Length: 400
Ligand SMILES: Cc1cc2nc3c(=O)[nH]c(=O)nc-3n(C[C@H](O)[C@H](O)[C@H](O)COP(=O)(O)OP(=O)(O)OC[C@H]3O[C@@H](n4cnc5c(N)ncnc54)[C@H](O)[C@@H]3O)c2cc1C
Image (spheres, rainbow, N blue to C red):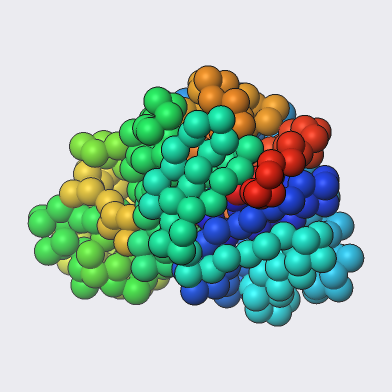
């Protein structure tokens, strides 16, 4: 098992439960480092509603089989069996009540009980295949009859991301879908930065759209761009050069609302009217985009229309994303067309498996990515478990 993240840990544990001798190799100082920082330190470990519609992939049906065979309820049962308290925050998202380390401890405890050998501080350098897989690492060579690549993507290099999984895929001619940062803040262009940087720290409910995907959650403005759940979700659909559309009215008919207030003879300024549903600083900047300083009652239709459009049809053409340093996930990766959706095995390379984030399956924000890690790992572990381990003379691990 290459990579001691969510998918690797879970797969190692399950494969060992299925009777395979399993070695897990992790180059970081400890396993599960992304789990530790996930969900703001509380690990959003699954989503009650997780289904194929919550994932991006060149083949949106690929994840269906694995997700159907290992469901959120299965992971919840494991969490409950370990006495880990949790709660639903919003939209089916389940978080630990306590620290995320509880999830790592649960996986490590069960993996150890099942007999998994874990090697940390052990970097995978290359993989060869001649009858068996031979993995060259910073701590020597290992051999195995099956090899599971669970080395994640490129997001957050300081947490251990290396992209070695893609190099292994290339080495075995397994095709890749080009990668890009996902669940990532988007950066203003120079003109928007000059106009909106002063709004840094403002957050408000909104609807954000990109390439036909629409997300109704909150938006956070920063000094360099836009972030917050709705933007992060849309960012996974964003391609360089795209515009994103932000409805700061969150579905409200702002034009009708302003006209109604004007008809009622409101002496308020336009910014004050907007402040009924927008943070005051945001209301002021967007009022100034369409109206002058006269009270609402003196504004012509054209000004109210301009303000309403500015608020509800804020179109941003980002300069780009904040990159892999800030991205929660990596979109793209090992092409699903080259893998079995039942087992995660590379169809052209018997014994070679890819699971978790290294695969071109990317979940929305909200516990979906961990559910994919557990489900793809489980599918793989079941497949490996179905195969009797072949004992070699030097007894190399059956699964590396
Ligand atoms: C800040 C943050 C918060 C997140 N919060 C959530 C959340 O709450 N809910 C959710 O569902 N998802 C969340 N995610 C996404 C989730 O963490 C990932 O989708 C998930 O960890 C992917 O699991 P994985 O095992 O495939 O990859 P990873 O967890 O990235 O594990 C890959 C492992 O491989 C190791 N590795 C890499 N290269 C080598 C090498 N050469 N040799 C040996 N080992 C190597 C890495 O060190 C790492 O331990 C979050 C991500 C981030 C960055």
